[in-house]
Image 1 (cartoon, rainbow, N blue to C red):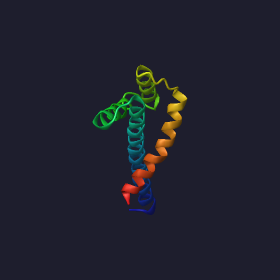
Image 2 (cartoon, rainbow, N blue to C red):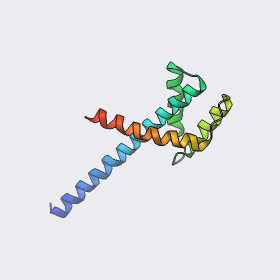
Image 3 (cartoon, rainbow, N blue to C red):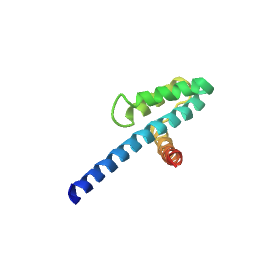
Image 4 (cartoon, helix red, strand yellow):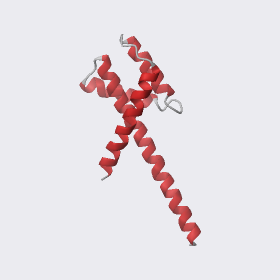
Length: 108
């Protein structure tokens, strides 16, 4: 193999790892976001975990965070805890940082 081919394979592997990490971080962020919303709604324990799983699954419907944000806005409003989309997005940004930190810690 040539040096160019070695570098190309290396870049492909790095891209694959980065994509995998991004997927895991997004899923973890959505779980944390679901747990946060569950707490606002008044769910705890197994109910909160089940709700967080619903939030993670909601993200698989469409690309991006719009489906998750939409679900949370609707669910929080139905529970009498109306929350604006921008507030949920801000919380999601905070939780993404936390999710990445958790994944990095687990990788060590």
